[in-house]
Length: 337
Ligand code: KG4
Ligand code: ZN
Image (cartoon, rainbow, N blue to C red; front, side, top):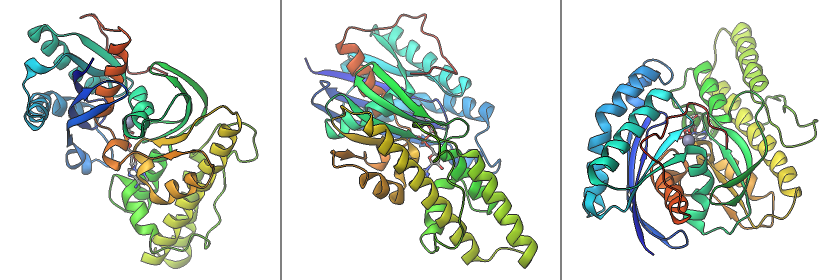
């Protein structure tokens, strides 16, 4: 049966709403609205949780209205409301959950709490129709893990970072080099003019078995490299910056590709997919695609970074299985898959 689902996402610094219509196997994104808070946090060099929560609360209604209008429907056409219930910055998650509860109660529609990570993990099924089980590498500002996606609500974690997420490392490297936030796109742009072979950075955990990853040592290595160059030359040239970015990016891509090979060797996967904000990186995508003969899926950029279409889709799959939540749905800052 075709369903119309409203999705709401507010777990970090994007306020998002989307309308999906269809079934788990055949669905259309009718609208996908994202209101970014990047400008709001720009001066602080990172997301300020209190500012984010207030901005979500102020923006949610407008974003939902916009998603409804762009989908050419009304709130009454919606069959269920799916909302990110965690993990994330608790103020933001709470804003979303309260808005969703208000709508569900006011309209008399079912409410479905969705794990943000499940949203990312299921996106390649939404965009590319992947069959279960597939390997997902989730790489974002807050997360880094290999998941075996076995069903709409069944995930096995095969490994992940033991410290920072790669997006955090990209953001930190950008800060160290005086490049704008979010760091991923700035580092990628600078790396285009850089020579990845000029500096050799450590490749953390490559010598250790399994699929675990680490990025904090790499960050420190970039800090040391910067300080050495500044001490020797009195500052950094544009070329130094570009070369550091290129080396850093190539190292991250190399390590993620190598660990992906190991995760795939665990076997029985139909495809390999990558999701999360860092999956926007073209060098990384190319390195990952070269790892396997299996079909490779990298969702379009707008669906790789935080969005509500992925939440609506995860909600649709859960709803098809008969799962709904009550008004006692809680917002969870931590919620491992
Ligand atoms: O998934 P996402 O939008 O938010 C969560 O963390 O859940 O990911 C944001 C992260 C940021 O750290 C940003 O710097 C990184 O994704 N990112 C990138 C690129 N675009 C965004 N990292 C590397 N290369 C990019 N092109
Ligand atoms: Zn995310």
